[in-house]
Amino acid sequence: MPANPKYLSTSAWHKAAKIFSGIIGGYMISAMLHMALSLWVPFQKNMLITAVYTLFVVWCVLLIVPFLFKNGWKVLGVYILAILLLAVAIHYGNLYQPLN
Image 1 (cartoon, rainbow, N blue to C red):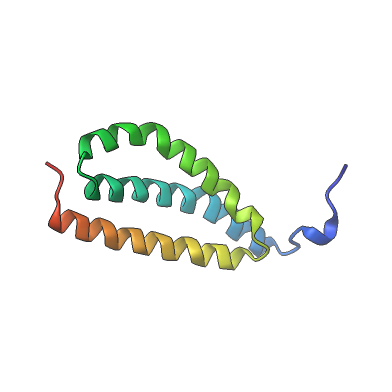
Image 2: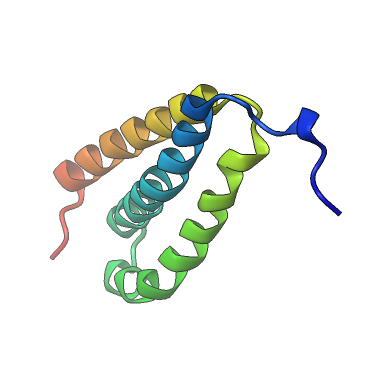
């Protein structure tokens, strides 16, 4: 059964924003999340080892999330905000608890 056209986005820019935020933004968020976690948890080396597997799972989830939003620009803004917050967490984590 085909999808109902009233639920599909009609703007090519919204579609492009969703695809870009899903692929690039999702990967950046999942990678930065694992980097921040490895800096803030006490078992840093184990976290980096398990990040190889969990990064792919988190990326797959974050790849699907933008298509649940109606507006592509809002999800792109949310992903950029998450990337900036994770960058701040990585910066301060690296200052106070650097990896050994």
